[in-house]
Length: 193
Image (tube, rainbow, N blue to C red; front, side, top):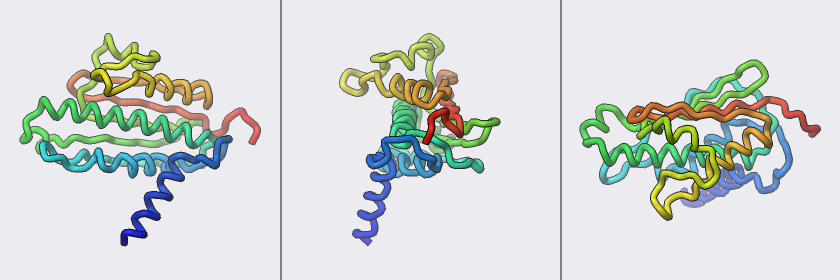
């Protein structure tokens, strides 16, 4: 069982990093999201102070998407890590009975919009105030404590989605209710394979 677990971890890490696939390839977006969730699994588990963070996957029927897979997985990692951070901060302000009644959750939805794959990642964490929302994709902007964040994750994610893939990345949020990130990627890039 231990050897099988190690084999699974190595497979997931190889899939996530896509070290041997620096060029554009057709990939299964769901596989990339699942690999990212597997890497983040320890942060989603039950803590002494509060129950685990539920992950609700609502995967649509997506075709293979042309992309830089390793870079796109980094986008998923940045957004999902921030969602976990927001939920953990929110849970510090909520009593345990409230967390049990309204569990902490991250919802991942995928669908098709004409010639684009749409990935929506939403959480029921702290949310982002309107004055901060306009700055979240700025380089070096962070709301985290010193030593906790560089302020580069969302900036790099925005560049990967918009410049490298010709897609769109935006965020909607309501303070104290949660945040939703939407990634829209063309299914076919204007780059010869």
